[in-house]
Amino acid sequence: MLFSVLMSVYKNDKADEVAYAIDSVLNQTNRPAQIVLVIDGSVSDELHELILRYANNEKIVDVVPLEENVGLGKALSIGLMYCQYEYVARMDSDDYSLPDRFEKQVSFLEAHPEIAVLGGQIAEYDSTMKNELAVRLVPLSSDDIANKMRVRNGMNHVTVMYKKSAVLTAGNYQHCPYFEDYYLWCRMIKAGYKFHNLDSVLVNVRTGEGMYQRRGGKAYNEAITGFQKKILELGVVNHFQYLLNLAIRLCLANMPNSLRGYLYKTKLRSKSKG
Image (cartoon, rainbow, N blue to C red; front, side, top):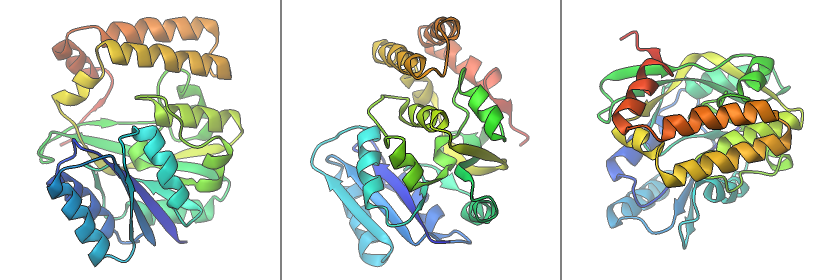
């Protein structure tokens, strides 16, 4: 099965971390037929040169430069249109796909063609990618994933491989800051598409204090409220669940960063076995 990989980079990405992510895709036991790299606005000279070097050295790398920074949702929606194959895998610009990630996903999807979106578990590491901190576990079955969506995102976006046609039918990625993928999954579930998660870690994710800082502040508060209104309108949540979600999420977003980080690490993640 031939498939594409979709990535987006922007000005805050570091060249060495992007190289680490791309290399983890190139070194798979089942390599993709295409890697689409969206450059979301201007980036550092070092990062730009790195991307061009990959494009020149690897025939499967296609670069999509955008003149202005449009945000992740719009960047991915544009990049998806350049993906040549029906199956598309997502990859973030500073994470690490385990070597057999795509082999596992392709094998499962070939055996289960009814699945439109397939993900897996992630292990969270510190900024050095040497110390495992926690594991974010998500449900396995489509029904359990749909139920989880009423409260929290039931998919780890950086692990997914999906059918391009299904994503486009559901409206593609749309502008929904911080929740672009979550909103897409909700629309796809409402459209009747089936989901699944593998019971194994597929991607090691780079985290740090910056992740917890991004989940607080005025902009994040507005994003939470806007997203919850969207899934209320979709019928994913009822009014009671909508108000409950707002109360919990806004409380979490407005507490001190250190406390928010502590809760994410101890209450919202599984402890690392390492």
